[in-house]
Length: 321
Image 1 (cartoon, rainbow, N blue to C red):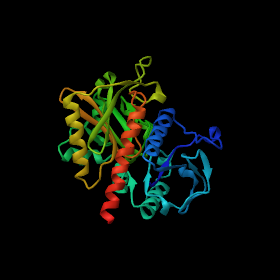
Image 2: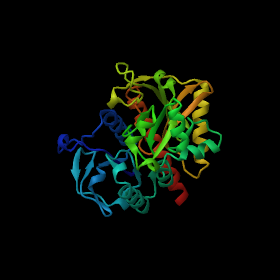
Image 3: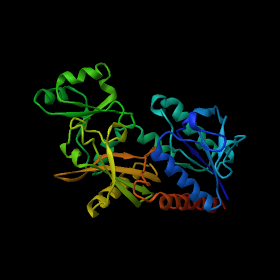
Image 4: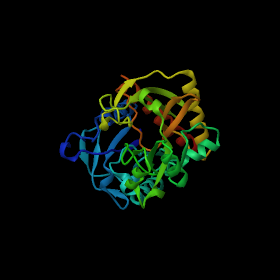
C-alpha cells in the first residue's frame, strides 16, 4: 500500500466537506476513475490544489479513500506524486517549477518526470524532435521571413512558446495581424497554417510506450473562421481509431522524446494528416487531458493507469532492495 498524491485544478465554490470538485468536467471524471483504480489496488489517494502549496507543505489535502479533508500529510510521506492539473500555472512558471522541484526533493517518484515536465513546457522542443526525424508542422520564429510570407498571402498560426488550452493562439493572415503581439514577438512561434485541421486533430494517449485510446478533435462547425479544436472554443470531440501509420508515427515521437533524456510516462500525441503523412502538432507531456470518458474507457483507463503506477512503485521498491 502506497500514498499517491494528485494535483488537481479545483472548483473551490463547488467543493464540499465530502467532495473535491475539479474545474474541467473532462478531467473530473477521468481523475476520479484514476483514484478508483488505485484504490482497488489498495493505494491511498490524496487530492491537492497547487494553490495551497506553501513552501514545502500543502495547507489543504483531500483523502479520496475516506472522502474527507484531512490534516495534510508531509510530502515526504508520498510514494508517488502525479503532477496532473494546475489551473493557471502557465501564468506563474517560476512557482510551478519550484513546486516540481519540491515534489522531486520529497518523493521518490514524480509523474511526469521533472526533466520531462521542464523540457515540454517550452514548445521549441518541436525543433529538437524534428532533428530526430519527426515530421512537424513547419515552425519558425516570428521574424522578417514570416512578415515577408504574410505579405505574399500565406497564413501562420501564432502560438505562445509557453501556453495551454489554446490561450493566445491566433491566426495571422496579414502583416497587420502581427500588431497583436508587437513587442512580444520573441514569446511566440509561427507555424504554417494547415487547412487540413478542419478534418480534425488526432489525439493519441499513451502510458509509457503503450497505446491506450484516441479521440478526433474538430474546430467549431458553426464558425468556419475558427481553427482551434479546443472545446471551450466550440470544438468537438469524438472517439477515433488511429491507423497503423498514425500509431507507428506516435511511437516514433515518444522514442525521439525519450532520447532527449526525458522519461516517458503519461502523454498525448496530437497530430494531423497531411500530404506527407501524419504530422506532429504537439507532444503533450505535462498535464494533457486524455478524454477517456469520451472514448467510453474511463473506468478501463483508470485501471490501466493504476496498474502502470503500481508497476512504477514496485520497480522503485525492488531497486531500493
